[in-house]
Image 1 (tube, rainbow, N blue to C red):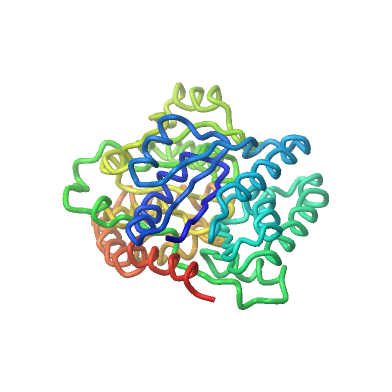
Image 2 (cartoon, rainbow, N blue to C red):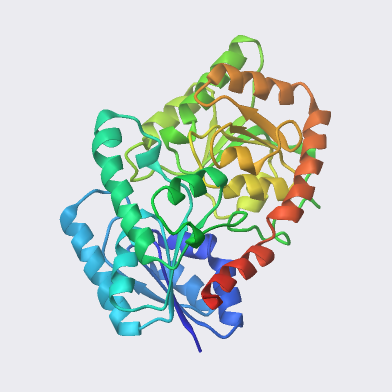
Length: 373
């Protein structure tokens, strides 16, 4: 029996985003071990129910601390030494940077990195980030890629960027996202004329997700006499670009949004919404847009890496200029005034989801990476 170690910075993502992959690996006879710094009893039980075992390791997902990062590396090193996995899957920046080195040093046969976007360091343009942090992180990524057997990316822009960090471009592989359970996310009970919200944002409440632009566009529409119903689903985050709850509650008090908090029941909450908003500054291949597409919900996203690949403009959704609230307001207005267009784009989105985002097909590709040379 092969053993596969999956290391993340966030235990929640192991169940919510890697759950189907874990099940498929277990069904193929693999022993799956999951590790994360914030491994809770609740997530442990859910992962155990899938057939995986779990470990809690030290570390912090967003905080920059040399001491904590050293302990994080040591814990990963000790865990690999203890369980001696045949393969390792690393995702999120710190597991990728430190886990790749540890697994190479200890001779793990299959060392796979999953890079789901380049994150805050590659979207923030402050002097400290652009000229201090980014060159260091880029160098560390180059080392991580050198120590890996395969590097998986989700869009062509990231493939180009990651390829520029290595001479061995053959190890860079692109897949169509991390997959959506099309049986769970389906359009059979979705009614466009019986929705609670016109628009919804699902995700972490971060500046580089385009939150400021959403609020500014709502203000523009209100000045034009329109009253869009907009829901925010998500929570504040340790990320430096996160808004505070005070910000969110202030927007709610002013009538711009309705804050619905974090939800585990994405399917039923999405049924309340007509259109998904994600005017992000950069993504990998946003899963929320894929889930929405499978349910027949079109998306409005920025014309940036990752986002531009998840929809077909004016067919399954609408593209907007990045950091342009006026353009976002104009595109929101198009959907507000044309419900038939919403339905048309939603139907097109369902077909695209079936063609490209089936988690069963994508998991087969992922598992093949562990089996191939």
